[in-house]
Amino acid sequence: MFDFGDKKIPEPKSYVTHGTLSRSWIDRDQVPTRPKPFSTIDSHPFNHTAELVLPEELYELLGQKLDQDIAPVKYSRVILALSQLLEGDFFTQYIKIGRTKSPKKYGSRHLSDLAGNVLMLSEGRLGVDNVYSLNDGILRLSLDKETYERAGLVGKPAVTAGKRGTRARWLVEINLRLPSMLHGKKGFERIVWSFKNVLTDPLTWLFLDIAPGSDVIKKHHPITRESMAKVNHLGNLKVPVLHPPEKSLATFRDEFSDYALNLQEWLALISVESPRIMVEDKIDPFLSRYDVEQDLTVPEAKMIRIKWKGMLPARWIAQLFAVCINSSKGAEPMAWFALTVHGFRNSPVSWKRAQHGDSLHGENGYTVMKLPRRSKDDDPSLEYVVWELVGGLDGHS
Image 1 (spheres, rainbow, N blue to C red):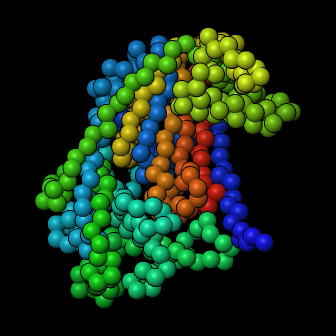
Image 2 (cartoon, rainbow, N blue to C red):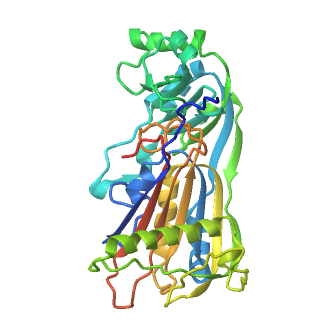
Image 3 (spheres, rainbow, N blue to C red):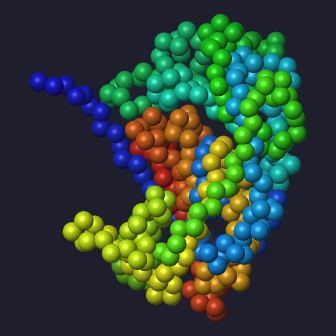
């Protein structure tokens, strides 16, 4: 008799939000952080891919603005041991001086408020290897049980996909910006000892200075990369119903669920370049029964997909979204776009400070879609739909 154990993993969840923003113009250098959809963008720090899908007519208005206002993200690969993060100018410039000031009016944050903030993610497979991350001054260590016990640090059980009751891994969170985190302090010296005597292996890190202002990293000989935009002309595609059902309908809940699922599926098919959504597609229904319930106003459109890959900070993605909003004016009925962002599957954290579980595919990401106005006389408020994809083992807030 086979003993497969209790390895049932909760299914990934998709949280869907529909709403409007009264502000139709967003300052690129002072992007909001509190109202959705900006709060979704701000709460997801570790991103490796961003895909922007939009009609060709909007791209003709937007393309030049993207080149002017959205600079490629420069990030680096660098080899460092944990102990080097706590030494000299690296510790002072990138961790202790780094700051995030309190959001200003409307929850906005200026780029200068992010000076000294860095994102760092080490190599390794979450749930298998020891994996580390650093953002907003908080160092997170995902450790196996043996390493955790030898390190002598205080942590909590990590969410894992193992048998029920298994506590094979631990998560240690260290806020290095606390006043007590200084050389000579007893608690800090314990961390330094652990890094110099237990967690000693040099690792390859992805490193990103969100608001570059220091060149301390150069003495560690980083290899710098840029996330360049790749534009793909998708051709003439069938366009699904873009507007959600009216809230006054008695069946609104069920109809909105179908609407959100159909639209999300269509965007996913664009991502994998499926021929099923092409206008000229004539697949035998015996092979595929998928069909697009086409929009009455815009049943088909020539579509563009722009993709960036690398280490993409939330601040950069929020600026990209703001530029798209500001450039979409005057493009009706083609003033709509969808921005899909994928997070690193091996990051110890996914949403805000919530743990990221080591489930099969490491799902974490989101899609923000700006909808077109229903008519020329419609309220000019920005209407949007947000899908937040959360792994079955992940926390979400």
